[in-house]
Image (cartoon, rainbow, N blue to C red; front, side, top):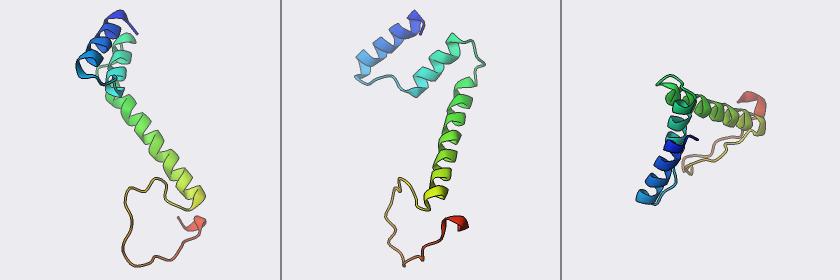
Length: 85
């Protein structure tokens, strides 16, 4: 990380009390490597898509939802075999 971004990170963390997030890291990376201005968005989207694909592959392999965010309260659903996902 360049000295200017290190100082900016330190100042931001001091002011907010929060650590720098992925947006800051992607901006610093883009500036340091002289990437195109839209690189942070592209890198973030690429990483997010990779994660979604990994979750989908894991769900297909196990036949169950992973990290469900809600509890289903409707009628019982018959189980499906892994091959039918």
